[in-house]
Length: 235
Image 1 (cartoon, rainbow, N blue to C red):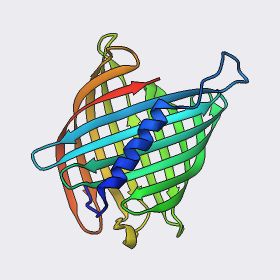
Image 2 (image 1 turned 180 degrees about the horizontal axis):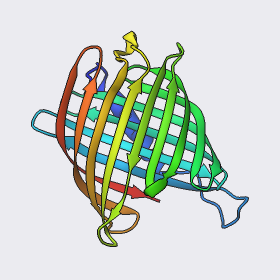
Image 3 (image 1 turned 120 degrees about the vertical axis):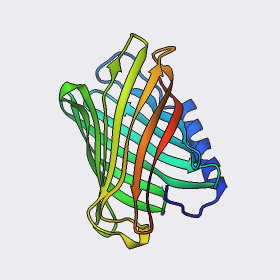
Image 4 (image 1 turned 30 degrees about the vertical axis):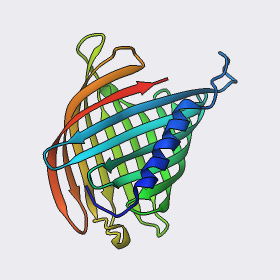
């Protein structure tokens, strides 16, 4: 995890924002194709760590819309309780347009809170690839025209009706060095792991697992294996 200075109150503000977002979502409408629906999904809300590292991580999405058009809010990041700093935190606002049975095209903007406060344009695709592989991809265009990318892949293996194994991969890349962000060209972060979750209810499932993570920047390179425990919930 890349370390950058920030104040703990920013973390509390973000947590309160996420809490308000989850407790007071836009209302879902009645069953009508012309009406709006909404869904809140905390795909990952977890502790991740080992002997040297203790992080809290989240990957949360919320959309409102219909089958054809949606407005998405996405936020992803990690916070070190030991150091009181963020490693990464961002919020995306996207317009999502269904372009085929299993695929949406998305465009919008990203506000990065850490490692620096920046705005990026976002273009991406989200959907279901062959063999039921879940794909969430995005290209980020910085204010200087530099290009960053993020790809998430996941696959659910049903061991029983309630017990589900989820292998997942996340890759972050950069087209070239970005000095003021400490970003190095190439693969800046690679994360591969598995999570075994148990659906107490379909909407609530605790899980355990592990991640192997490699991170590369202009300042450092390191890799580690981390234990994961968390919960997945939606409504």
